Image 1 (cartoon, rainbow, N blue to C red):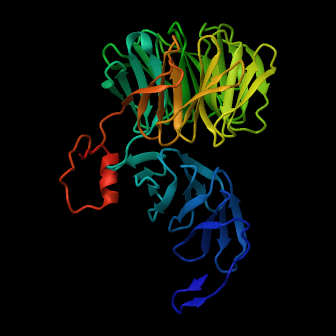
Image 2 (cartoon, helix red, strand yellow):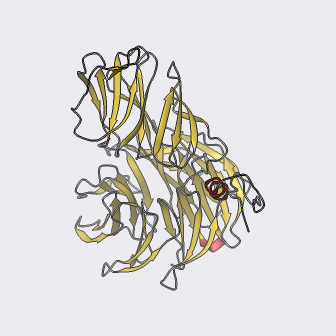
Image 3 (tube, rainbow, N blue to C red):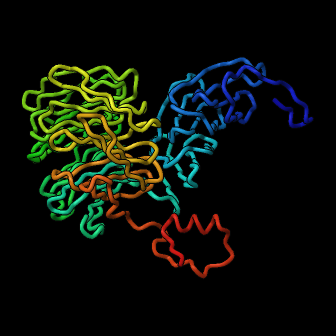
Length: 469
């Protein structure tokens, strides 16, 4: 601690066990906030150095902290790509902002704490309304991440949802975006597409589920009821039921034709991260953040099986065999666990991407498993033997979702790089067929003859769509 008027050092604190990464001071100099390498935010009395509050919630190192002028609001961000807003006096987390495309390197709060500006490691800048938790500005230069993807190969259609709140419909034969569905006011975290390619469902940070007709691009229903972000959606094989999971811990079942909420399950203690229907439509499988999987009877709403056994691994992915007999669960620990849902027995453990698994999918007869990793890779596994058949590389960063067509010939993936990728996996090696993405800010701009810019600036422009010979 320094006295700026005299340039004198007032105090040296050596009480941090972990490396100190970020620091902020209130306007009157009474309160200090620190962030450390273990993801803990600390506040201290600036005069005495006495520790006041320790705030936990981040899953990685803290790289940025900021305090409002009155010292009531504290913002923190870091490697986990989230921004947390805290009551600096009580330590209560008021809100979590999830829409950063990379680790948060800088945060600045307005004097009254109503606005926050953040900068991510990829150079993207966001301005936030801290009271509503909404992103107000995403300046030109930021490429929206793609969080959800769904494939209907019979009609050559694919669906993706991005961090700008848009849902894109793709022609997989040409790689062209044929529709953009706008309506959500926050990032779209889950999408589902009907088998005939005529109905789409999306769920988003704005706490709503939307049902769309792709025949005319119109939103047919806005399904409201979740108290927090909708993290996953599913559409039954016959298109009659919609399921949605949320950070509020509930799993909801909706009538797709009328938009009526048919059933609310409140059994998940932690937030529901994902929901999937079995291919026969008889079962719904849900997974939550504490690693618990539940199997539901879609007709009666009865919970048939509760599977706990993730060894504390935070669940991020779930998939089931067509008959619902086998469920694959995975999380940030890098293991994929295959369970028999009727007996609750663990069938196999696959040591997949060691940095963490974000998504999994099973083929129609549950013989092939695909896992998408934090490291950007997609792995193809033999379920019977646990043998790794192939590794698909192309996404430079986290793969958020992966899906298979019914014939096991094509796979589709999406990620934080803002792309949707179509793969031919029939050959066994996995060939990248097509990269699909909405136009970026400088798409197809020829900068071959552009002078006066550095190599770094040239690479940045090309990452945003510019081309050079």
